[in-house]
Length: 173
Image (spheres, one colour):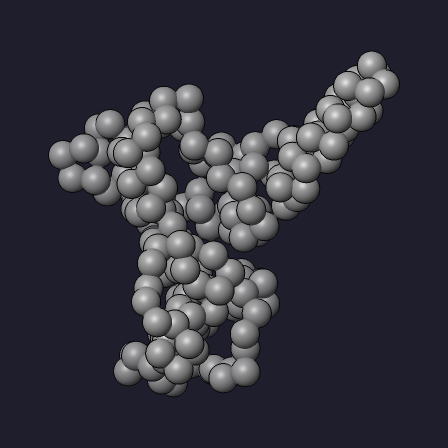
């Protein structure tokens, strides 16, 4: 249970990340309807759960990912309402890259983004895309370092090349 896992409180940030996938996997096992599904009590790797979910339809791992995507979609919808990002929402991260095909299925993700009651008309037109790089944070650090070097050397060719490498295209949902 989450209490046994050392979780003292629950926030959305703790659930829409790799650790959240692990918590959901173990939580869902405790539900009566899932007791008959294969379960590994020693599985504490979000990547493994994600890969297993994609390879094993109907598994506990797939149910955990489905729950994860519903919560993730709902939070993206909340962000759309709070910030009104008319230029779009760009989602980074390795989990999103692995799950992009599932995210394109409306009942997995997009319906939960859009499910905002009378405000759904405000959310639906906002473009949503998954960035196709796992190393976005590293890319930003590299660009910052290169700009510091450029300021000293007046050469911007390396900065441009690294910017293209770490800030590639996105997959629209």
